Image 1: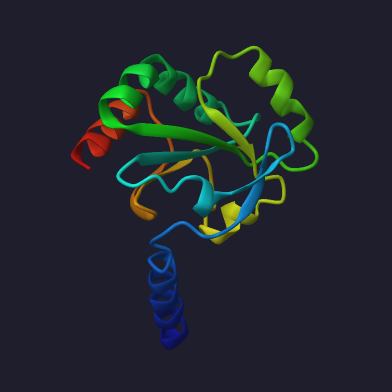
Image 2: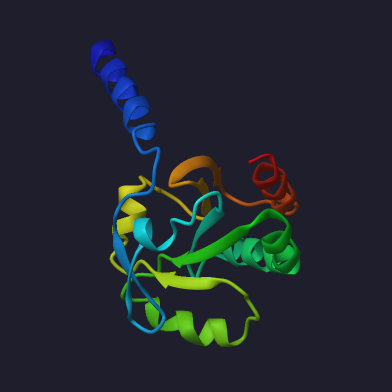
Length: 159
């Protein structure tokens, strides 16, 4: 039994750190156009923040709302772009567009309806954000508490 627990622990550590760059996965934008994540977001030395969210996730929406207050300044100062990736499935995906109509988010919104990207990155729960520079995952944020956007700013500034 101890051997099995140790084996599972070692596998989980290895698997958790195996993904250190963006996978080459295609998802869709709001106009149903396919977007390959790895190819589309590849500008050298630009920082990309991929924020995984869903319409039913109150902390996700709070995080995106908080970042939107600073986004224009951050994007200019830090050469960064945030991509909001909806993980709403077929049951809730129809809520994305109406919800966005009531928001003034400056982000590009992509739809991971089959959750292929979410699975490829081994994301279990949301909100979940990854900071990427030169196709390499530099930092991961799991969850959101009020004020965490300032920590995100410091991480991006450090890159």
